[in-house]
Length: 76
Image (cartoon, rainbow, N blue to C red; front, side, top):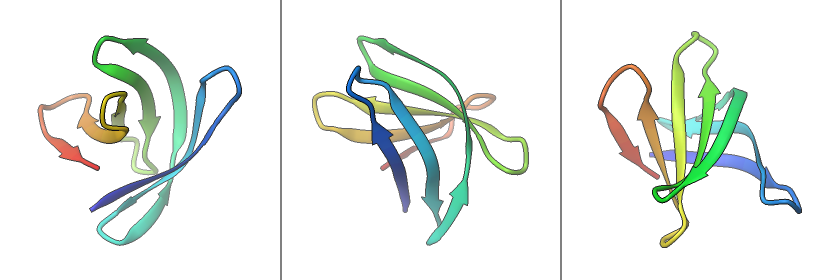
């Protein structure tokens, strides 16, 4: 199971502080973010230099965690 600890700014930007994977909270570094028809996208980097993409689906307000280099996805 994955969780996302983040803040929503007044202008709609999201600041991701950490994610929860396998019942462990992991601090992340955040890169750029953008919005398209799929939702709000945020690039993050895990401590082991793995780049991931978080996508917040507007219709359901659910997060998707996607590997940037692969096709694995985890619904949050």
